[in-house]
Image 1 (cartoon, rainbow, N blue to C red):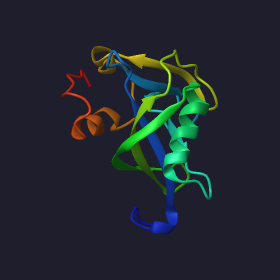
Image 2 (cartoon, helix red, strand yellow):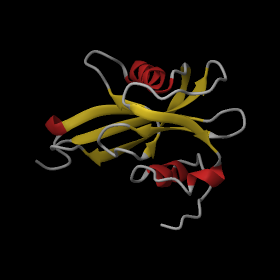
Image 3 (tube, rainbow, N blue to C red):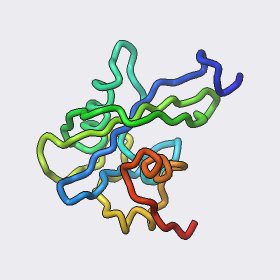
Image 4 (cartoon, one colour):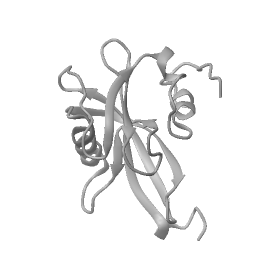
Length: 144
């Protein structure tokens, strides 16, 4: 199957959320793909679920935080373990209430990070580049 084969596409969502201090919310992946790496909260869209409902649910499950969707910001495609392609629609979100995140569901940890800290983290492939391309982060200096 080619990466463009629609039958092998797995609909997913991701949430890009900044706190009032401009720190980015990330979760440490507790499962594959990207086990042990930092990424935005998100996951698969369940049957019959809208992308907006899915991203709100995933953020709550993985961080304990409630969010509202501001707008869709972009889509990335990633190879899924075992075949297929994750088609991840990312949304800019806003917290309903400012509080500390707690890793849950398949997230081993959840925290807010400053721009300076982001370049030091082991993040999922293409995450920071996508956020820079979408104008959500300034260009980051990375040692990798």
